[in-house]
Image (cartoon, rainbow, N blue to C red):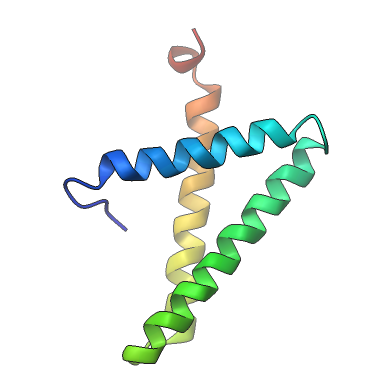
Amino acid sequence: MDIGEGLEDKFNEVVDDFMQNAIAKESDISIPQVNSSFMYTMACYAARYYAIKSENESVDLESFIKEHTEFFESSIRSGIEYYTTDEENS
């Protein structure tokens, strides 16, 4: 899932909004609960996207799930690398 040219700023804006919202919730509930809530939100949004997309074209559910699972796993790895590298934290 690549970001098209011209959409990177909007992508980063959405990411920043989600991050700020998650950080704001940390004081109300635990970090694992915030993390679980946002992961569930991503899964629900992906399901919504699948439902909309499948109305207009034939979409293989198993392929869709595999693609998004790989994307979520890659995103988690990237986030962990970002927040745990010495370069980013210094």
